[in-house]
Image (cartoon, rainbow, N blue to C red; front, side, top):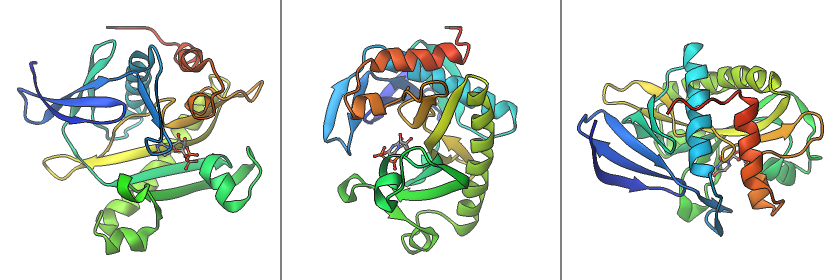
Length: 239
Ligand code: UDP
């Protein structure tokens, strides 16, 4: 597989085309941003850890029948993925109060919910990724109603699978963000990444955050936290 021209550079990844029109080459960067680009930095080793952690989660979810874009790892910081058109919706699943939800609803950080909460955000940097509901998605034609129903169901299924995967590592899965895409045949699948950049992971024993909140809130030891997640997942490097 040959790497072609760069199609897109995001905050944490670069996407290149390949000689297969249905496959893209994803290169994970050490760059970190938070607060809609208002805070910028670099976390040594993040690209490699997120590439490996995300590949691990996608393979795990795939083994339970979740359709996803991940194809294979190429190098410590690179992977191949199916080329999809990403729906401009961020899907957040929450098991406990934290971050923007705790603030918006005045809930105490860490409060466990009786059932998970699913939220949709409109992926639009100029608008600051506003919270939207299914009527707004229909109004803006961001996805078909059947796709939204499927996404909601799959997001809850993924939550159950990730909750038990992280429980086995003695980690609390507080919340996480997913993105979905559609391939050339119209098939809906999980895309983007699942990593400490996109999830809140707390150590079960101490409650210590092991995720991007360490960067957002200047808590220090960011790389060590990402590495801890990889180690607890039983991380072994195949490439
Ligand atoms: N999240 C993300 N990308 C975003 C916004 C949120 O990956 O652009 C993740 C975040 O890491 C957390 C969850 O989605 O695991 C919920 O984030 P929240 O809405 O609380 O926003 P935050 O407090 O992170 O700004």
